[in-house]
Length: 429
Image (tube, rainbow, N blue to C red; front, side, top):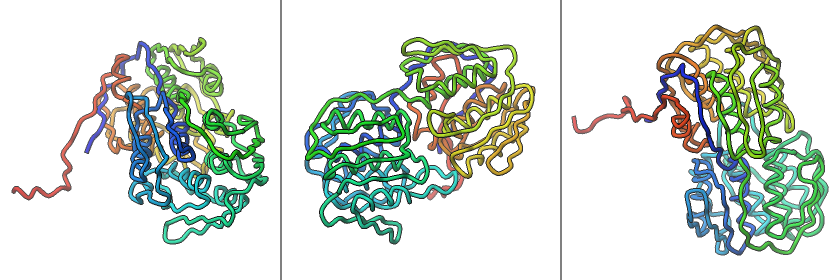
């Protein structure tokens, strides 16, 4: 078992470079299955979710070649439909892009039900609705999704009942080579939706309107190879912005697109944090006292749900009472009990957390209950004088590239250690 140990209470100073966007990268990797020629992806984040995705593709007959740490060549010319291994598919939520990719390439799909972080009910009903509209017959049985078509995917109009990033991107993948025109209404507008559209268009797709509520996809006969660079990760950037504010330091976060972070920047400024922007960087500086704010998470361009746990830590250190409302997921406050171990004063009522600021947090042994909650625990440990230990860090490594090394580079006393599993029986004795 591995854990992260932090001796916190020290301000962070220096420059952190952000890696490629997790949520864009995993979708683009699966979208490569549509292409029979070689694809080169640059700025790929070396994180667990990407590694698992590449391993899934490799097990399906895709040729994978790592050209550099963050550059991969993918050749899916000989991919075997329906051969994805269940044990890997169930490790991550984004494996559902396999359904759209197989339907788009073969007109049929056979994939195990996806896994991922547990913070409430996360159905894929909107994905199924979209695939059905394009002519697929979808059956979910014994934890496996089977989809078939009579004539391949056919263009159609799809109106999503809710704004859904995953279903929007999955439908874009499935419809890129569908016959006719597909129109997506009430589409998600996140930057990674736009990035996927840009990738597919670089391969010869005809997708317009990504980044708006209406996306139009004119199906093409086939896609061709390309070289494409993934956008920077806005959630990783936002996490480090909050870490700078929480520790009372000053950091330059490089390789970012400042516009993607406007909602985070606005709330930090409202709290009194000094934030300045350049073309591809953001500088965050400390203030003597953090002010309370109210926050509601919303689909982009609103405040991102994936930044909610990290921001909650900062609210714990602000003067006064803040309200944090979760407007996307039903149950994303499981991490609150971990912050309470550190002395946080938080009361949760349904989708709203009432956060009363405290003078300081106290070091404790905590755990990462999911990916972004784990990032929140790191921020809390960095901002707290004394030794904080974080367990279940495999969640964190799903979405953050070298988080320990990057933070150590800006002055954090942080390390990853291996500890014996007390539940393992030692047969030698």
